[in-house]
Image (cartoon, rainbow, N blue to C red; front, side):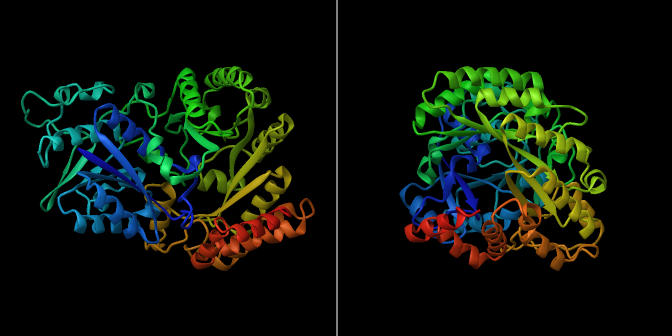
Amino acid sequence: MKILFIYSTKEALPFPARPIRYWNDIQMGISYISSYLKSCGFATRLIVLPHANYSRVIDADIALDPPDIVCFTSVASEFYFVNKIARYIRKKIPDCYMVIGGAHASLQPDEVLKGAFDCVCVGEGELPVRELAALLQLGQRPAHIPHPRNAANSTRGDTMQKLMPKRVEKHCVVQNLWFKNNDAVIKNETRDFMKDLDAFPLPDREMWRPWVADNSRHVILLGRGCPFNCTYCSNHKLREISKGQYVRLRAPQNILVELQHLCDAFPNISEVYFEVETITANEKWALELCRLLTAFNAKRGRRLLFGTNVRAPRNKSLRGLFDTFVRAGFGYINMGIESGSENVRRQVLQRHESNEDIIRTCDEAHQAGLRVNAYNLIGLPGETPDDFKETIKINRRCLPDANFLSVFFPYPGTGLYNTCFERGIELDSSDDVMERYVPVLNLPEFSNRQVTHYFRWFDWYVYRGRRPILGLLYAALYRTIRAHARLYKIYRLMSVHPFLYSLKQRMLRTH
């Protein structure tokens, strides 16, 4: 049974470069499902598809080895393109079985099944995809699929014989999977969230090796789930898909095993980003992880640089934890400010930290010697230009080392998507949407023209008088280019063409 995973990205580097720049841009869900399938005896592989010339990549791959199963993942903004890929593959290989999963598929399974796919995975995919592959291996093309007895409690080393039931039981199905059945849809229930993440094999990185350009920067997933209810995020809806504990963290010792594996597999590794919604959700666990990382780095000739995500806590100092971070090798944190208006942050975003909390956390990180990368939003429903001026004000007070501003785009399944729907705001779902860089909501209280202006000149307003003027002008130029697909394509060529790349680097030295 040959299983092909497909990952598509608008951010692919132009040919002839490998499409993914750094390892912290790979898709970890695919990696975990692939490694689990391999541990169960299945053969998996991956192709990464840019939006340009995708047919050439697909044709070259399936000509060598046509797959039996094709697995897709998609966020909302990629689904239009992913469905186009699936239709293309269906024409090339009519009998292949096509499965799609990921956040968008889990939150909008009815809509997704209107596409070219045979099956949708709702929720976590390791166990259901394994069970699906096991039955397809036996030649069964399922609508209802027998559910292997006790399979939900097993995560390692199952043989095909152990996977298959001795007899078909009535009403037993593969949980988490929805199937097309002629004009009907069979909706199977979901199993509980996997409690023990350490039971799974380490993520499959070998499948990504031919597609990643730079082997120096990597990512390790620390856990799954988020304890917060931010309205621009889908975590609060994903939490409702299954029963059981949603927020789960891996054991620090298991994380160190993966870190050592990375160092062995990639000798020139220099940086690791620890992906988690917020590392401060469990401070005792974070301190234990830092203790192991400190000992790990002490044994290396060249220390690794670490980074992670931090959320400003309410009425609490993190200075002691930040000092521990620095001793362990952390050099930076990512922190969401999102809006400088406390009213917008609380009433619109459901984030309840105060401006004082954000400023204190940012100051303490800088005092400890950490760089701070801030994330902000513009063009939120209900936001006004005066509200966004508060965002400029708090960023000018905190002076983050790097600033990432996104134009708000409502994704299906989020609270703010429902807000937009209730307000009658229509969204463009085509493949050409430059979400996060172009305003599309036409808000009466914050016009697209105003949003565009502040988006382009954000760094100028925040860092004026604190950074070189040429660098601030470059930031405005970049955001202008980033909002136009054709201009951005030309800009991306500067990443692979030697002369253009050197010119770009000379410009960046002033930033």
